[in-house]
Length: 110
Image 1 (cartoon, rainbow, N blue to C red):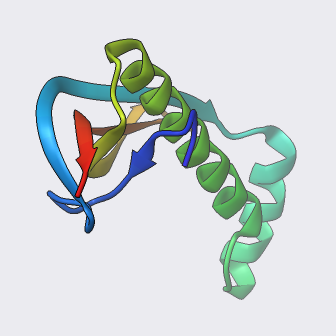
Image 2 (tube, helix red, strand yellow):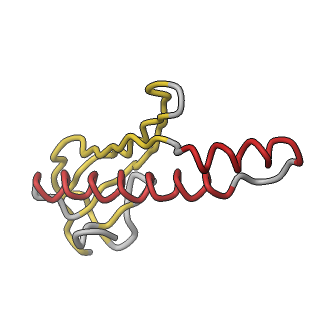
């Protein structure tokens, strides 16, 4: 939860009723690799295994995209974002965008 906004990848939240749909909330970030990570990743590629530097980079990017999405939802006056999804795309060699998006809603507690 960011900005006191509930986040779920389902259509509903147990114990709540959606009373208003406010629109799409979205947040994105573009991250690039760095030379040091690339050198270490090249070595990992030879011996195999997880490239933890890239795993951390993408995890941080997802968190930032979620934060930006909830900032957008707060701007809309939302209590929650439902049906949250992530997508990623390559922007250029060595840089990727992470997009988090969902439906901003107002809720009523049952």
